[in-house]
Length: 372
Image (cartoon, rainbow, N blue to C red; front, side, top):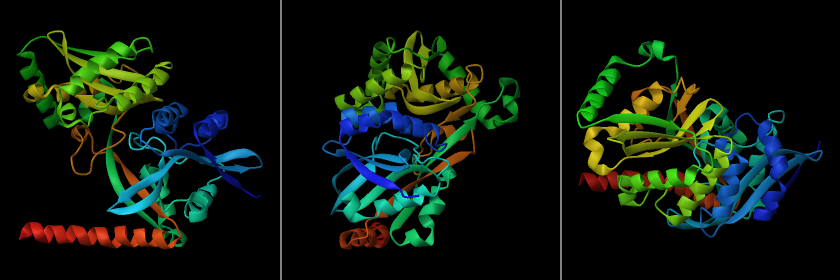
């Protein structure tokens, strides 16, 4: 059977695909909350990567949507080289994402990748797909012989995942040293005043006040000082206000709070997906770092998660250079890959050579210079 593939340009064209897209997600087991309609629609509305165009690639078979990839197209510099790029809609704010392909049509993934390698079809030099879970099997597809001369796949993050168990059995799962550190941190904090913990799954009406509260805490953290927080710009704050309100309709937002003498001193902000908590963001004031308020809050959130109906506590992303604190609770982690699909063109091939060969060489040269 023939496949019908095409691009849909702009937000209005994306809106026209809403029902088909949501039905496809129900038939695609490797997609995540960051593929959801609420997430991508908010990303399109707030133009997360300013100046880029919304373009959605669809593949139909017998008029049924069997693959859909909402993207943005634009120009950027990669290692100083100009490039026309395609990136998933929602980048760089999306954590783990899948490629929406119907489970009944796994062969279509290779067809989709083949289309993304055609410069005339994509009008781009490279497609960059970030935060793809290794567990979905994408790595093997990209490394297959027919594709490997035009693709690069590399590890981009490692997300720790804690399996939540009945508190009566938790002693069998968490190390003695972790419990000692937690108890020490709790006693130290309690010596300064009254400590309380709260878990909130807000309604849309509850969110404005809660967002203002946690944004004020983030502004006093190192993230606020560096301007890298999720509320650091008005554009990002508006995006998270909108996505939180959309998800809160179904009570899929969870915020945990730690209070010291009735004042909130730390928060964790995340999303619920089935029985999994996606631990998206946290912060605490810099001047309280010595009291380990972040560690104490995380300990309380995990200790009470089972009673709250959670079975997994998932970082959903994790730095390769700065380990996530959640690693203290678990050795389990999901690796994420970043796939680069270079167009079969002169400039696409040049970009591939520059990145695959030139970047490692530059790193080796920098190490030599630093050693001198």
